[in-house]
Length: 231
Length: 117
Image (cartoon, rainbow over all chains, first blue to last red; front, side):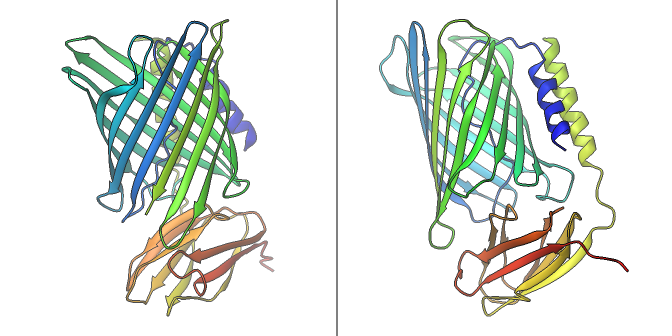
């Protein structure tokens, strides 16, 4: 079983990538629960030798059926030239395509539409979410196609690939390794996620990761943190 | 379009078709949730086999089946049967509980190697 996982990872890592933007974000899981509602906050900080970038997202999400979750985001960024401020809005739909555990692996799909604040710039993302359980470990992979266009954007199509291999050690501490590729970027690093349950459906989930870019010789580190409160 | 895009697409398509290899004869086991209690509270299943667990919630309120051990979370709608696929599990005990009534709605799945003789 481990050799199969290693094979999949090596196949992906060994491919060439062309990258150019912020790729480190979140590895999506395919699962949706009915009656699920959540607030989410994400932070992404990227530091290179001559630049730093901070992105934050706040979101509210709700499942609208047993298999579909809709989430709306406000996206803020601080770039080299701009102070932190609202940059974009996004609507995301996640669809759980298969029942967890029924097939050899679990599948989902993601659809996102993002519009830049005060500009007629758009980005549409769609892709596949895959998860396979190996005992107490889980392999999660995302493959996304991204199309951007608008008055300030060069029309282009990009792809991003994300991978997480997680060990379910304790509910609060589940160590993982994450890989992000896309837009000329290849990053890998340690991560963890955890969950704390409260009464009923109330629970707090957290994730953090420290991803280092490997294809450049200079400094290029990304820290990502996310909290989700489900109720 | 760069070559690696085709490669990633091919990889995901291959994995998707591997997923279609449905376990033809999944063994079924049944649990009942009544008065916020799972019956039986201990359920023995064969180790290293995928199992279809059918839970009949006879209560008039919803419950949420939750198990970190089994890596499953599922809403049990009132007066309905819900299917949860679990395993293949190695030998051992796997605890679960109902999120709305964790004091009474608790149980354990025991996966063990069953000698057919």
